[in-house]
Image (cartoon, rainbow, N blue to C red; front, side):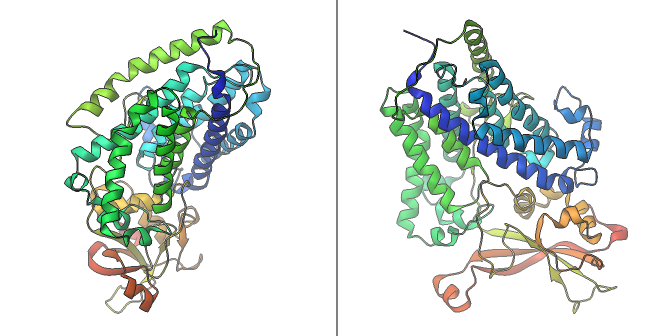
Length: 473
């Protein structure tokens, strides 16, 4: 009997690998289309400035060795190409060692991007993609059955994702313990989706049932991932259903999708396993050595997870091999949005015509319905949500963004849904104002057709011109 492999999980491995390659493609596509305005040579947080002050050992990246916009674009589009090749199954046509090297390529490229991405890449799902992607290197191809130890390590990641998120909720906002957080969450989440208005208006007893079901799924069900089949399949299936519910209710980039993908290796999918030879000795040695390394690195994330002062979404090593996760330890009761406007008047006055910039995903025009973007990640829109929570989140980049809008910078404007100013006539002044947003009631929506109702709160950035852009609101 082959103690090292689990042939019955060959179909689970196949589905997992193809789906993970698809998420890699989405991640690299977002990087390729957005990097110039965010971290490019004229970006809001340029890579060159970052690598000049952060050494390689703290942020290992190809871009520590060389950076240009053309080189970054080449790496991002190469990542897209390799991800598509993996999604098409190219690794199955290669020798085992070559397939492993092919899976290593997107991991190295995306690690290079994340480690210089700064604020724009500070989200938990970036580290999660890297941690999962690293394990995928050692999952093998058609020349060998799936290694049991790698399958268990993937379940270990899923356990930490779900259990860590459950603990941070119970230790954080009291509304999770009272089962009332979802009275507000669908309205105040970072980027509502097409159905979020409807979810918000569900009866409150159902919101309480949602919160209770979340606690069960995140605090109890993860332990059953390590139970014999079919119990592990049932646990993973319940997690998939829960994540699909979250997919319907909001736009959380690829967080929900990668959690679904992570649950697949725990599923015992039906299908006759193909005959494959025993795993070569060198492969067994490499996999066991990697497993030992990852288990050793799990100490600090586990200690954090069990701590009363648990922190969310933290990497404990520069390679993002084992991380800690969590989401929405606190839930906002009120939604604020930063609305950015420009005018062509030489001197801004009360009666000046201020025209609003429209972002792709974040709420703006109250009559515009939220759209579905996940698993694609709109990085600027997400950071605008954080900026509305506190101007401190925008200290490093908001002033530069305003400067680029005053220049009608094409790369920055491509991050937006619409600019109200022609390419040859940029605004003279740009300002930002803070509004309170709330979902309309059933009657208000019938009468006005608007999804949102907004109320002015205060100025976020006073009228600013190109000669003196303020760095802090």
